[in-house]
Image 1 (cartoon, rainbow, N blue to C red):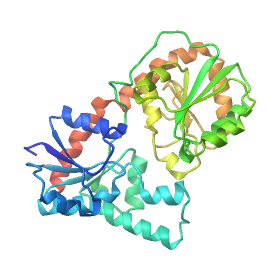
Image 2 (cartoon, rainbow, N blue to C red; image 1 turned 90 degrees about the vertical axis):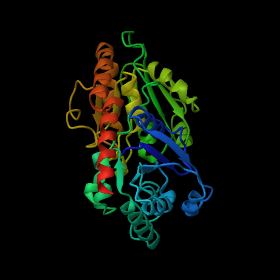
Image 3 (cartoon, rainbow, N blue to C red; image 1 turned 90 degrees about the horizontal axis):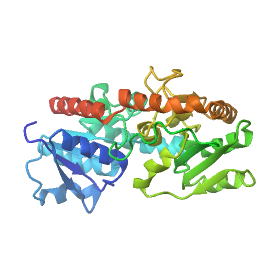
Length: 355
């Protein structure tokens, strides 16, 4: 690609962390970004014909924008331009297996599956955040494996960076959950773990909001040292992470839980904070079962195992302090923006050849 101009297609949230990271990587790779936010997604290619969009060399449909893909594909195909889609989630997976809105064998589920299969197969290149997600697209969505690539989510390193690396661990130990209280994250499992916890005194901090918050908050009434707060401004989140000694990842029961590495895990590791999360093959094999990675794994949907792990860590403040460096080292080795930049560069080169 000589022009190195990417057309960012769709009414996406450009401030969403995945989008911000990818856009920054494009800039660092020397690309110019042109934003096109159509008024009507289904007719966007018609609208684009009347826009002066310049000499575009690649069309990029960002995460969550399945509804923008068909029109973007029509427009790109007429101009013989490669199109990359970065869905981040599957609409079928979300509605059927995560939200359980439709049963897998229902007509609505089958219709949704067929619709999304056709969409995802139309992309010249499809991105996944983990290899397990890539396998899902290949096996369930029937996307050609040669057209699927992995680009981890990572963290915005201008915000999420090591803080208070050498300061002592707090006493009592501070344990932080931040998130949107969805089933994937398993906040109700964390609540059960708190009720089962038997160990040194700790303080529990919940930050955020979402559908399961009321359930979690109600279940923990009367338990001391549990604090709830609403979402912080995004720019203040790194400081909140830095005040914690342990950050909690995800513990849910959905299939998706085992296919993803949550944003919060990348962000905590980038801030040099140890993480406890559920076992998942989505993590590099070198991190799984490694006691010195700064990431501590427990079985999903197992509040007793989570309670026991947290009690073990809380009883070893010096180990927790040392785990900060291990957590940051794991981030640098497997998830840093420098690695993502190389991966994106390779993906762009391959996408150009596939068109």
